[in-house]
Amino acid sequence: MLELRRLLDDIEAMSREVTTSRQGLSALRAYGLDALARLAVVNDALLDKIDRAAAEDPSWRGAFPLGPRLDERHRPQVEPVDATLIGVDGSQIYPDRHGPFLYYLINTGAIVLRQGSGQAPLTETRPTLVFREEALYNEDQELVDNRVVNAARELAEIREMALQATAERERLGGELDRLLIVLGDGPLLIWVGEKDSRDREVQRRIAAYLAELDAIRRVGAVPIGYVDRPRSANVLRMLHVAELDLPDIVTENLRATRYRHLTDRALFEHMLGPNERSALFTSTATINRVDFRQAGQEIAFFYLNVARDPGPDAARIARVDVPVWVAEQPDLLDRVQMAIYRDCDGMDYPYVLARAHELAVVGQREREELEHMLTVALMRRGLVPMPSAKATAKRLL
Amino acid sequence: MASPLGRVLRSSTTIFTFGSLDNADLPAFGALVAAEVGPTWVYGLVYEVVIQDDPFVRQVVAATEGLTAERIEDMRQRRQVPVEITALTVAYRQGDRVYQRLPPRPPAALQPIWACDETTTAQVLADFAFFRTVLNAAHCPSEELLAASLRRAAACRPPEQEKAYLLEAGRELARLLAADLPRLDAILRRLAP
Image 1 (cartoon, rainbow over the protein chains, first blue to last red):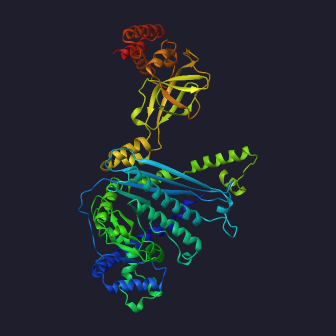
Image 2 (image 1 turned 90 degrees about the vertical axis):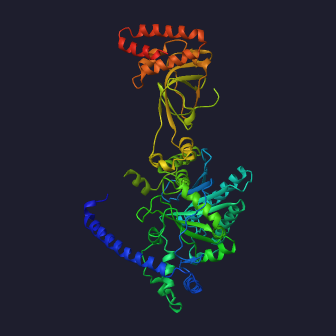
Image 3 (image 1 turned 30 degrees about the horizontal axis):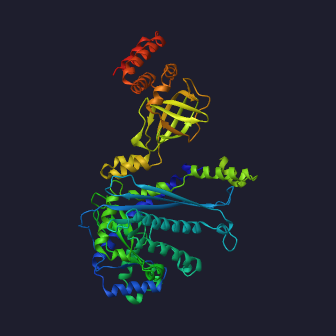
């Protein structure tokens, strides 16, 4: 039970602090926009500084520009063409040690929408129940934690993206003219901690992920990682480094960024008009610069304003991840941007991702149904699964 | 009976509700539909079609700019919100014999529901004992339903028998509703071509 009246003072204090913080961020944003304009030209000195920062602190996540200017804004001038958009999302049920049985579940949802066809899209869900002991416990015989399930979901999502792209290309009879875009909800670059990146299991995971990206490329489809309301600050970290002298680029100074708590999104809300994208960058994360680059799948990103109305208040900034091999083809990138922008019409978010999420999500009621079915199946075999006393007590409340 | 219209969501002795994902091929008001229940076929008259909404469909409807044909078809054909159709049980068949009364058991959940062809409709609604079932159903628009089902049943007969069928039905209605002339009048007006 939450006694709201006991939080009244805290609520007041919080609203005061948020207001003050917003004012501070507004000044920081103005400084950041000014820095972006002042330091707009990409030169060797800037690139050296970024490389130095990445080498100095491998956990530093900056932006490495791919174009000649940092303040580039681009609205495609191409005529929109019909594309096929595939949206994929995943959800999970984490293992619950208080539940009646130990398992976890991954469910992916996919939708294939052919723009301009007038046809109902194709939809598919793919649930995977993981219940074998070797998959539920790690080498130390501990129950796997949520990170393991998240990694499994991430892999299931990229597999589904590859599977759907391959199937759709086959349905097109192998014809490669039709633009095929596969969108996932979230970054295209998987997150791996610097400490873990050389771990054998992590390397297997990276290899499996990269193999699916290759499969997508082989069928001539474009993989996209779409991040709505991004919290990333790679560009701001780069701007901070750009203002440091080369000898001053040490870990301590890298962390003492003036832009703390500001996001790239705040900058680009004030820079990008409807359907405008920012300059292209790559993340300096080691996994991107080593593993993904070596596999020919280094990930680039840009910011895109998917709003229809102009102005910073109306702006809806997304971060769009694409492989560098896509980023290097400006015409293709323009067509991809146009197709995504078109799919965001009416929602300021890709329709295919909203639907993929709806297909993938496992609600509480479905989870209860699943556990009821499991209970019945076990009872038929003479077992009576019971939740823990704690779980039972909680359900009574 | 080519393909099922949908499957049973819930049922009782007197009505059954089924879900359909196919918005394009919804049964008409007053149409006869059937479900197999063991050795019997249970027949019902469609009296309510409910197209549910949810927050997502509201958002799509509100965003008229992005309302492409693909999105409309997606909402109509693929979303997991089925159209709910409810039928009033009026008869059942056992072997070759049709009984215009409530069946021994209602259809089970997920049982397929079929549209009845003209021959079946004409056979099942040949007698008029089902009038009382419809007239006594407080939860449905009984006058409208009876008139609609009779018009359909008449149309399922050979043209030379249509008028005779409707006249016979009118006589039966006059007998049943002799004490309720406004109601009789309401139905007869709705029977007019």
